[in-house]
Image 1: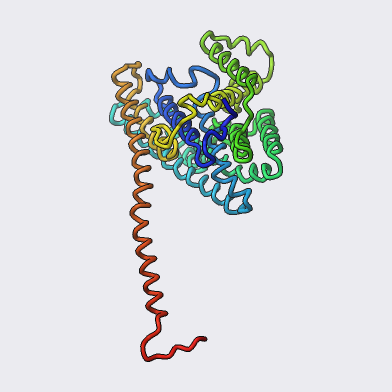
Image 2: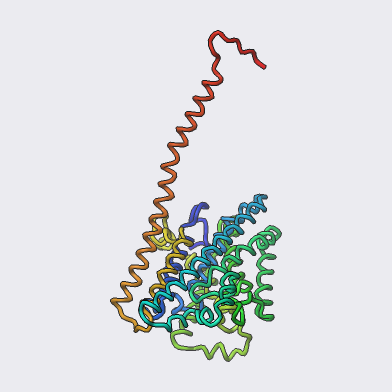
Length: 402
């Protein structure tokens, strides 16, 4: 037993992060096809948080490596532009997924003769207020159901330079400002407008940034000293007890225990938009427990070739494909009861497609290097030969040094 994200893993790429990101991607895909039998086995059925919280935490952790080290090395502008560029890519993917979502459900309505499909996933306003809704799509205000996490993630990357700047001063300052922002967002209902509908984004970036910041903090601590939070038996016991209590709350419907506390929703509620404290503590406890798995545990020996690590390594294209396939799955499953053969076929084919894409992207990354390397060497050799030919002394001609 060692500390969270401890130096058991080399200080290069931590494949455990990719593994858990892959696990989150699988659960997101399954959860995004409501009414299938397998959704009863994802993490949201065993605690307060779900795959989204885990994914955002891991995104923050990975950002310490992808952008933080560059920022701390003095390349602040480069790190900033790199994170904003990634945010722009996420926005472009969001536009693509939104367009495909409208097309998939419109196709379903026509092909199946089920016009009520256009009342699903927040598509109603697209029918009743098409012009306003198109503006909402373009400004990221109106987000369709199950196609609404990338705008929040892109906002995290836009916030990232500010978090890195605060981290450069003191990691505790960064975390403190993040906590303060989380509290103020709840008190004053700060959110991004969800035009043309009232209210704000379902994934409120001013609240979800705290999960991202916690991941960023852990990532920097591991870079700095080889572990994030020191292993403490009492802390493991406390985290385990909280996870068990969360499971018992869901299993035995003990919600009244939380209601009896008479505390604000942010402290004793389960609001996902503003990330209530029980949801935050649940994902942190989950990460701490699994990160402190025994050295003999398979969770401590995740290699690069692990299928789920491969999936997590290519999270954006896999997520995009999974979103499209889950929307198709929703149309197929519309108004149907859970049915094992059909659910297995839909989920199985969808996951097979995602693993195939990840495997292809792994192969392509290697194939490019193999194909380019010999050419580069050949060009270098040719360049050296050309240089030698040009600089070699020619017969019968005196070349005096200049």
